[in-house]
Image (cartoon, rainbow, N blue to C red; front, top):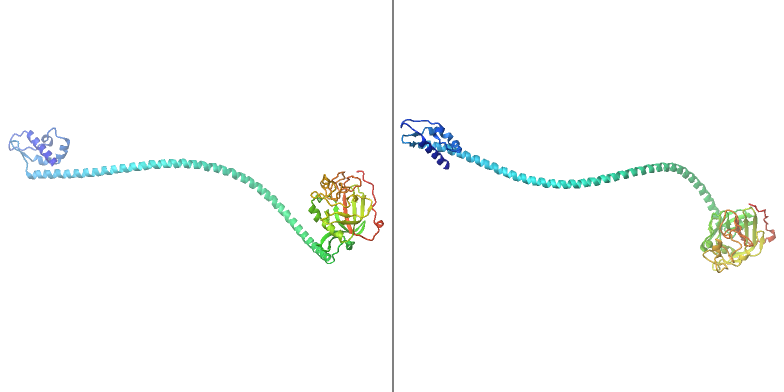
Length: 429
């Protein structure tokens, strides 16, 4: 209705300004002459489509505008259609504006999310950069380790090559040793048979083996059987049993009481038979003792005692009987008669202020302390040392090259019938 009123005002204003000469004369004025000069641009735009109707309006001499109802209705219809179109256009524009505003809000939210994501990504990038740096350092460290392992691998390969060579050599050695095992198995079976034969015919002495030297089985009453070294034919005759032997220093003789009680060493090399066995042998029947001596200059000598008896462990394995002496090596064992056996951990000597076994680095029937020390320290050459293996009458300590102590049951042979070892000139070296 506002638009309609505006149009009516414009029309009435235009009619009043027209100069009409005659009542019957009609004029078809152009749009610019009808509209006043001060009309707005909006009115021009709005009434432009209805100019044709306005041109048909009759103005009388009294300046009265006559417009038919039908023309006015047509004009209103036109303007109402335009108004509807404008309203629809405005509605569309408002919708577009709303959409744009909604889109702006969405864009703002997206922008904020983008900014947040950018911050998160930057933080993650910083973390990833630090992680990558750590990984790079670890990679460098691993590369160094790889180089070290490669070097070690090369060394291992070299060692492996050498081991393969040794393995080939070892395989040949193993084959050789297998053949030796087969050989020794045969020898062992032979020795086993010999021992079984010895067991069946076990004796208490080496006398039956005068013609069969070697290791044989001895069985004493009330005592377990044990092996001994039978010497067979010697300078003193047949049937002797070795109870002690020194040859090259391959066995350590500086041992404790328990070791000397049980015995030690190898029967085919250096050894001591053991004081308990020696006690059992000498109490089973009367025995005699024969000591064979060799010096570094080549000189040999001997000492024979026609009665030899060792006491029990409770008696300290005392040298209870020694008998008469015969020989050319001196009676150096005489001062030890009736003395108990001493070791570094069992002091039975006659000295109260020192242990003779420690002083002489051996084990013996020490008194004050000794004139013989056959279980002393072995020297590879002749020395004058109280720790050496020696046999001297007047406290001289010349070391011996070898010595052997032998026993056998007492025979009826006269002492004068024992073979006498000849002295040979001493080597001046």
